[in-house]
Length: 406
Image (tube, rainbow, N blue to C red):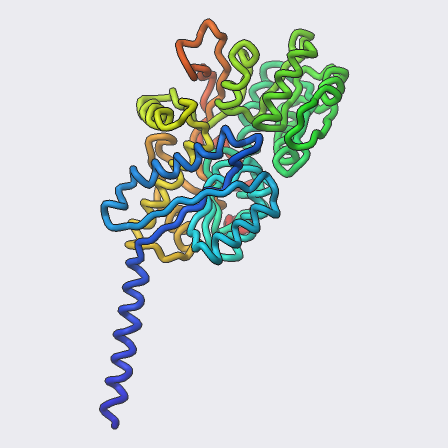
């Protein structure tokens, strides 16, 4: 009998070890692209974000090495409650490992909490609020493409330096608009300018006339558009009808995407200054990706920086899982590995991920070309200036993120 006990224990140890080995070698991944598939942000995310995820899967080479990777998508309809319900369903029932895109700051902040609670992963490429890596940072979330601090720091500062020292804000009335107005106001004041007023508008508005008349009456040199997507394009089109720019005021598209410029057309958009972290015509690598992406869309659209970020973020995620020898299905552990490894991909180049979850790469200040300067479809931007990654985003010395050691 004495001899049987060690044998039983040894047998248990072998089973546990085998189980641990099998766990480490798990090569199943499920990606959930949570985006706006039908609303005002669908052009800059939507189906294009899902396509970018599929392209990243194909380019990773993991499937040829025996990995099974599934991509699913859902429409959060820009509503935080719908976003969180989908997130819980995806994690608990569908066994989704990682959330991509998550456009809309209100949705992103809500899903951020679910992802942390469930120890999943979010690589956010769509939402702008800098709170995702500041007061509401999480060990399970990486903010990949841009944020409100960076937009304010680049576009806001450049416009004040160019003489735009009085501002009036037209702000989307939800978390994103509030964060963008807050961060831009701080930069304007720090740079010696002042804010004369602000007006908030509902998300997905069609009539901006009353808001624009208030901005016009303020006589501010800069009308700051703290909105995005369809709200921004509608604001700019209607501002043209009111003769705001002809009257001497200047519009600042604080968050503008290539899809917005395409929608506006160069006649309306020419001369606008704004900041992005990706443009399809930056270099040979971005041009190659842009052509491959464009060839697979019905509209032949070039990718937005949100869609490019989905591709870039997943490429790094796959590298981390491969380095770990499998998928541990432990969000915080995988994110920690991603932060350890330098980032490097054809779209955003070399970079890093900080302790607060902020992905670091350069920011580019662009100006929209005149129609006469454009050489073909989607040739819309000229590069005005570049802010290095270590200067573009909120410095860690100013961070309220509890993950940052001070």
